[in-house]
Image (tube, rainbow, N blue to C red; front, side):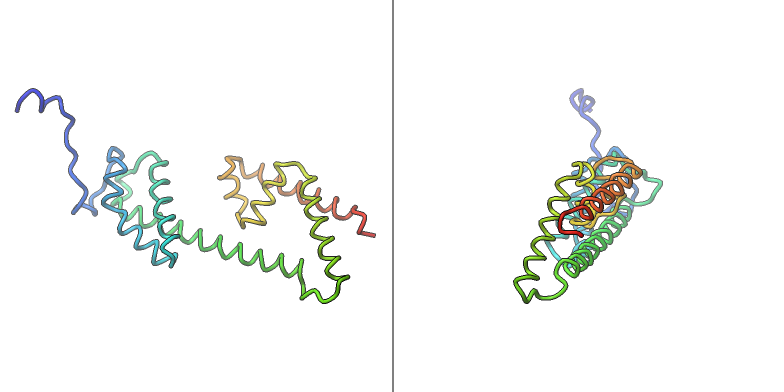
Length: 193
């Protein structure tokens, strides 16, 4: 062994062929990604049934893995951990997609209960839409943001809190205050007798 070998950092064994072994936090993301991205992508594709969504989900799984700052080998093999994370995140996405679809259906039933057949009904629908837009613009921006994320994006209050880095209680308070303010604005609007 020469002196240049002593100064070089120790070489880590590659993960290939050792996917069942537990990994410590010192393994770099590139190595984990090279070894585990194939199975993670295949599971994401099977669950999401869209190659585009599977690619996004695979990216998000490794991003979350990286953001967590390490992996505890006592939890089991890293591949099993990543596959469990993939499954959990895929189910969340599927549920959010279903919630958004249901929300859009409910909003469309309320805003457009049937095909508008007369000019009078069309004018009323346009007036209602304009009043809702004006009422949303009149409430404070932080309340509007929470309501739009909940109703237009179909996010839960806990998901909104995580995205905005706010406590759940703050999100709930903003949503409630925003809904109360919207109700007052829509109830007091000139079109309402």
